[in-house]
Length: 246
Image 1: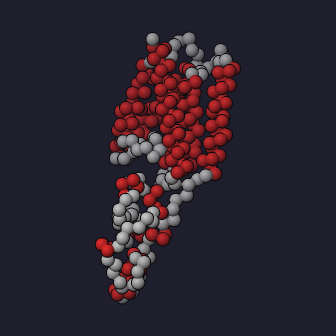
Image 2: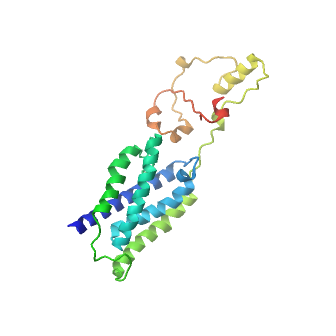
Image 3: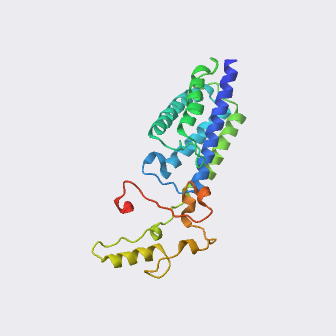
């Protein structure tokens, strides 16, 4: 019974890892990955995706069961550390499933910790060795290797050569106003940058009619679905960026 439960747990864990990898691939192909640190950068995604997919396929295949089981214990222990850190720091999403945002506490308590404990409790049968022999059947081994090789050969070049670049936001930034300019001149620059009307002419926003134009930066905002209708004024800034706050 314990061996059967172990098989089910390893299969489910592998399926979650494969799903998580697919969601990350979808994010990389549709959104620019911009992060200040290495662990959430585009480069780290290129390292994480093949490793995560490889472990997922390995767990599903059942090859070298004891070695896969032992590695999974360390991997999910690492997941717990990362997710717990993000939860404590107040991250809105664990980042495990691409654009599908999941609260880190939910991921920690519903996936990482339960699977880690399940791996510890339900171990593979003693008949399984950590390393072969015996070797698996050639068909089973060949099929598993072919699936991963196809993924690596097809998907990884697509991710590498189709990097989504961030939208150039320079056109949406108001020009920096010289402190030595007279107040009237500074006001003219402000009005010119904010509107498409003539300087010194204040537009009647209430009288403006909505247009069908789409804001180019909309696809880079995680609440795009919420603000995709109506007329909105969007302020973007970084707390640690003096130029942005100005």
